Image 1 (cartoon, rainbow over the protein chains, first blue to last red):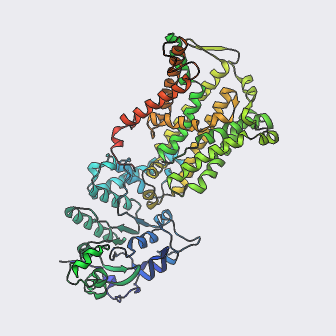
Image 2: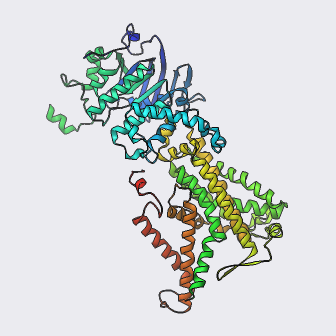
Image 3: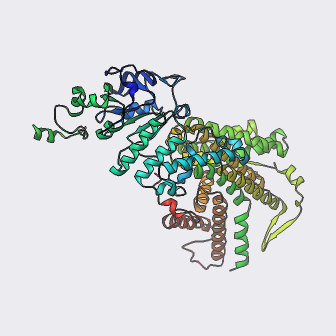
Length: 299
Length: 332
């Protein structure tokens, strides 16, 4: 498999919390507990600009919680983080809110796609554009104040719809799209905000193999455009195919990071995923909850 | 049966003071629920604030009609802030609970005799006599109009006329807002507020604006109801007010500009028709006495309306003029 990787991470040491040459996102001491359960406890981690970083880990590792904390959809108990020059701090006035982060250039997608079903595909796209004059209450009443900008936005939306092969669905309600088309729409809509960083929460979940290929291509295109990408993914083939760097979480901590090749050989990672069941396919992480009965049969 | 009287009376109910006031309140709820997805079950509170602000300022503080009307806007906005700040960050159901409770609290407070004594709020009898300067201004004051067989006085005619003009203005205002990117953000919040958030929209601020605008329009409805009836009484703004408004909105198909108008007209037409038909048939003993009589037909009327609504929800869940396609999607 010929896989192109970013050269920027060539000299980075492969250990948790390793410094990167040009980090776009740096996280310090981020912690989130639900009652007695510490879901996320990340001491230090950096994400390189212009790279695709995969966030992997067994079920219950805290990936999605970590993701929600980074994007402001959940509040951390402690932590400081820096996104492209702006500093955020948990439980303070500088705590991030999703909409502020999005305006700073960090846009996320969701594991369960959130297409706005009773808006047309085009309206979905246009919503993604930031800094719209017509979104302010008073100017919205006077069409000449925003119609020119609206035309620009529509042109950009149409170009993106074409790129994502959704242009034929332009006028349809988003609720009429198939699951895969919704994934595409969500990614395209995120691009309307022209983000510097795209956060993808399980972008390939529930998508058929053919569409997976096209989604992979779109994610690679993001990197080609100079955007940074962090994505949570379970499918190891996908992770190996597109990521420049892999961050592995288990039990709320970052236990390893490195290039996909080295992560695949990392004994700690294999154990975190599989316990002592060696030789199983990494692409099929073991379910977290298996009943006591099954275990006793195994032994 | 006297069909001309039944029909003209029902038609008058459908366009009358009550109808137009409720249509205004429903335009407000359409803003809240139809476009933003906010469950405001306290529209009666906004209407009461409108009516009482107007009445108290005119009676107790000597405001001219336009001064009192202007003050209705900030008062409705203050109520929206009071209701919205604690609840709009929470899940949708919390707003529903808080608004329905707030409307009842407000009504009970208005009934309080103590407040009547110290601030002239009027107690359970409410306030009257705050329409005098308007009646002097009204060019048709001495006239009597007829809608076919149904007579009505010049004051009512004037309020109905002004009320429907207000409905047109508010509907135009809503249309302007909803065709704009601002309206698009509101609709996206209705569909999925997390998606709107992830795209950089300040969801809380938009919900607040929606609550304020819809509340102000609801308060105007309250003013129309009070001025048209020449009275502002606490029980005009009970929970039934809110539920009639919701019924009208769902009847017309929430989420479209014309829904409150169509729904309101139909709702009050049906109420008027059933009222008249039952009145005449009980009076002329067309219906058996054990089933219904002159004293209780008013209750039966709303039972029939309720039955019709249940049938509507079962057979046409999208409302009478709604788009069936939209119902095909799972909207939580």
